[in-house]
Structures are given as structure tokens and as C-alpha cells.
Length: 79
Image 1 (tube, rainbow, N blue to C red):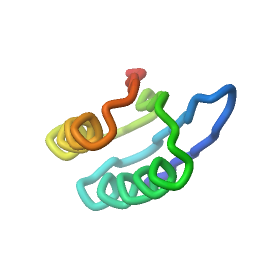
Image 2: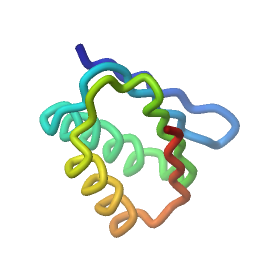
Image 3: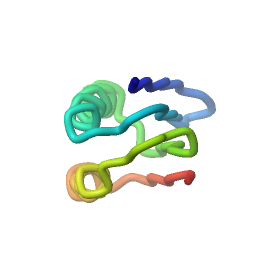
Image 4: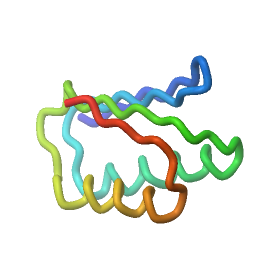
């Protein structure tokens, strides 16, 4: 099971990921995040992956690299 929670508080977008973060799931998360970022222009993001059971690291770090190239904001990962 894959579950995400996205919350905006104090000018920071918090993303919590739980379960199995497969390539397909991360692609869908990326689509959602990019929509939010394009729509609202947030620059500070925290992604919490402490509750991820299985992580497709290649897809995850590709997503982070792509974010950095397109948006260049402040992104932190909590492991």
C-alpha cells in the first residue's frame, strides 16, 4: 500500500510518504507535487520517508534531481 499526506503550514509544504514507494507511485507523487508547486509557487519542501517500507531509490533520487533542476527550492528529506 502507498499513501501520501501533503500539508502546507508556515510556508512549508510537508509531504509524508508511507508504504511501498515504487516507480509508478513516485511518478504519481511527482505529478501532484509539480502541480502544487506550479500553482502556488512554494519553495520550501520537507519529504518524510521514515514510514516507507520499500523505496525505489533510483526513481526517488531522480525525482529529487529533477525538482532541483526545475524549481531549485529548499528541499529536505527526513529519513
